[in-house]
Length: 465
Image (cartoon, rainbow, N blue to C red):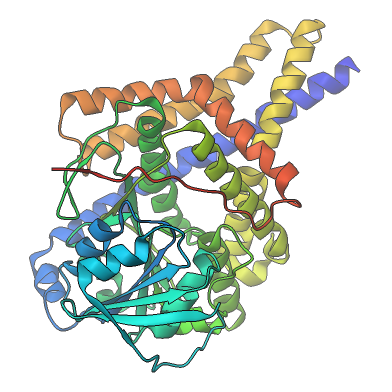
């Protein structure tokens, strides 16, 4: 029995060493990516090109369910983005609050007949509206069907070849579209592009714009700032070099419409429709032998409100992980399959064996290490080594993400904000990490009973000036 405990602990220790080493590799790979993207963004000839008619027209898809607190600010910001040709399609997904009435009042909506084909099947439409004051705006009112169903309804109504999915609680920076379409001007065959999402809590918002970026003083939203920095600045940037990004944030991502239609749009049965869609895009394009790229670009930024209570945050993280488990099971045929290139050989194994199983392995590690230490099977030095690898390595990566932000984009200018980021990066491993492990572990038990349950996401609204 003692040999089994010792062997199990060594295996778990090796697992976390390997997992955190992969994260460290992604961090290293992100550094040349940031340099290259920054160089392109500052190139004067390229900037002139981005202001020309060479930019492709875009439709922005905005699903909205009970978004009364933020819908006016969000839509206003989107309608005034710096881009030559675009339209905005907002879908009210059977909201129970006054989301539609706020839209009607703010933009002087009037009903029009539906004149486009329903390419992707959705829940029944109640009405289609245009604005008397904003010619770029189209609003669809429909029966509740979930976020994926709303996005499909917006795709049906869209007129342009590129579409951007943006949450209704998202504030997109004025030049974000110009930056997001940059890969299309480089002559590359782009299937989709991901941008950066940052935390808007405690930031000052004026006319739908974040005018003063602040790091929240409250612990939960503040620590999520560090999580988002780590996920976007080196997590997704690093995958650019490995060619296998599986995630484009549902809050801010651009897609080629023809490919979305080819894969049947968003799956309404998935609670992480963004991950599910990108995996299906990879699978479809690899099967069809289409040359494509799905890059992530760090400088187009959108700001979103994150949960401020443990109850809401726990529901969100449990749902995210439940969706990850479902997606990795559904597309298990891609696992270690050379037919899908680096996606099948690197990305899907990492998300399956790393991201998906990590909470299970971590809890097993705590239990086995605790039992081994209690019965004297393993010594305290080994137990401390396990904690150091499981927690300390992750803390170092969080600190490096903060440093990467500070030397590159520097959105947070105040010394106090930097100090809070560093503090949160250290404190993340002490209590918060264990809560997220529990929330993610819970997903394995709720997968069958709540497979399609989203849970209520309470919005507080943005601080305005």
